[in-house]
Amino acid sequence: MKHNSEIILLKISGEDKPGVTSSVTSILADNNANILDIGQAVIHNTLSLGILVEIPGESESSPLLKDLLFKAYELGVKISFVPVSSESYDNWVQSQGKGRYIVSLVSRKLTAKQISKVSEVIYNQGLNIDSVNRLSGRISLHEDNNLHKACVELTVRGNPESIESIQASFMDISQTDGVDIAFQKDDVYRRNRRLVCFDMDSTLIQTEVIVELAKAHGVGEKVHEITEAAMRGEIDFKESFKQRVALLEGLDISVMKKIADNLPITEGAHTLISNLKKFGYKIAVLSGGFTYFGEHLQKILGIDYVYANELEIKDEKLTGKHCGEIVDGERKALLLRQIADESNISLAQVIAVGDGANDLPMINIAGLGIAYHAKPIVKKNAKHSISTVGLDGILYLLGFRDRDIE
Image (cartoon, rainbow, N blue to C red):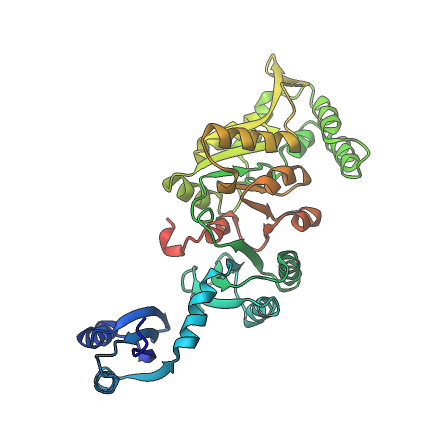
């Protein structure tokens, strides 16, 4: 940059209308100005446009500014000029090497209180908000908003004092103020995920299939007792799985078909998966449940891979045994790695979604691990969680806007 050049920040505001940017930049072009930075936002038909320009030494700024003032008057907008020193500009340029992060706020409805608390955490960590964008569509005040979603995305710059502290603060806000908050590094991987691995029971579907099978077979209480013992740590997952499956001996497979035909698919699952498939993502189910139901979902949702537990069937009835290796938490993580390796996909490009403790191994190795409507212990140990909206809320964490989504 030449020493005798001038740097000026133009700030333009007023009613949004066609031709404002074109008219202003045309005048700048006639005066050989260079654009150092430019940003524009429109909220409720109100324009806010900022242009940082360098005026070469051979051009005079006074006639240029006069022309801009006259054009602004013609267009019915306000314009102001802020001189910027070369020292201030150089300091601004040097700050571009700092870390960049994306903070996403997702809820049924966003409030000033939620945004205030989140921005305070950002400020206290020495970070600066560069931009704020709304990803969700406009919400009517005259319609039932129970199933609507709202999302704003903050682009944040700086080097945080403690990422762990930020995440803990955001989790506290999430629990007290009913908003999901994701804090992600703004890098190439965030915009280039390629594989999504889902748990099935209580994630893709809103039930636990083994509970439904046990109820239909009259052993619901016994299965519940074993589950509770496993949760208390008295028996491990594999042993509890064997004991519960044994209680299903003699169940007719017609019952399985009836349950499969009536699976309550989770809100947003169709929208999420159909859109991810459209953009080239691979979809996998890694479940401690059963392949019979996973393959049923595969046909409905267009899932690419299904790995779950195979129930042994003889003479149209369950034998109370399973076939092959049990899919527990560690195996889920192993299968995720296997699919990623076979597809030449790095772990940083993988998304894992689940609700239970046995989902944590895969959630924690994925580039984007999400605890979905999960138990407290799972939310505490996962980097991201969604508890306020359906599965399609994940699209916001990937940077999708409502207008991108079918």
